[in-house]
View 1: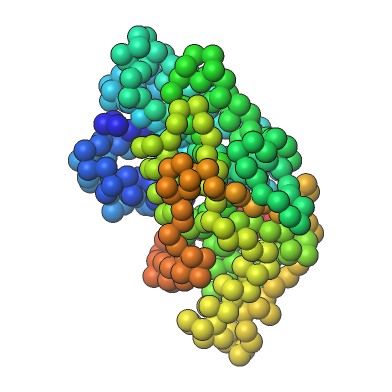
View 2: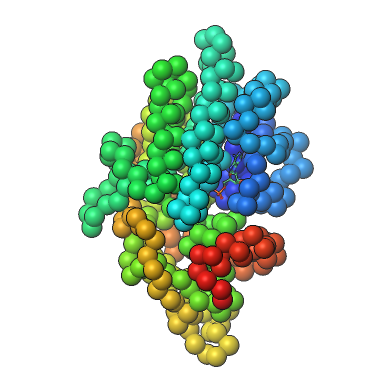
Length: 355
Ligand code: NAD
């Protein structure tokens, strides 16, 4: 691993990964290819942008000539592929972009790696393509059970279907061309630099500002939450030690109902910054809204394979992680206000009505 191409490195998980990788892999150079969609924010990496081992390229993973140029110029031997359209609600209102980026984009990137690496056996020696995917490809669980790496795919939203398609393409490139791939399927992440359309940062931002807290349905949908830096550590572990052609589930062992998350954030904020101006606790801001169509009830990951084979398990408990996350948002109000620009507001108003 010498020259790493990270795609989508200006997004939430990608930016946390770039920061960690520059620190953890001092011998490596890193190229971050990101189209800077609404979700990509170069400010997420302002602290590392002058590192001589880091280069940012604004561009599209669907742009085959650009990819060929980056692979050749930068002598890329490792790809960590985060770039995606990632928000389920947006995939329901506008699926086309999800098909383009998540399926066509992943295909274009795989094919660029194939052309760069498979010209001869020596070219691909030591190369690795890590595809970052989600547990949502497995569909929805009932009250019991866990997703394992052999759970059949059963995606329910255009987002999860597009990620499932990309996972299949990655697997096909391994079986058909011998491309050195590995895939990770991770549960819900939370932490710093999370775009405030997703549950936890949305609730933090609204609760801080005394705005209503929209919660889908009865609030009892369950997700398995993982602190983002733990996810990035897991990706580094799979890059170093994962077996080619394998998939690894990554999870936090932290199943929580959405409403529990909302209450936790409210209570912590009440304790940290005081009650609302009228003396009310922030829980009073909760408003249950019409459920998301096809809303999966429960996700839970069995992460035994990555633990037993590669020795990774999460280091940060939910209690510690949510506290760190809140502290980060409280310390970085200018980050939130810069992110909440006109386009985010218009989207927010379309989804939840004007506030
Ligand atoms: P994000 O939406 O915060 O970031 C996506 C990034 O990709 C942005 O910087 C965006 O500008 C970039 N991008 C989008 N289209 C692009 C294109 N065509 N070319 C180049 N760059 C493009 O997403 P995230 O939450 O950081 O998720 C990253 C990856 O991890 C995604 O593949 C997602 O499916 C996966 N994942 C996310 C979670 C989670 O909880 N957020 C959980 C499991 C897996």
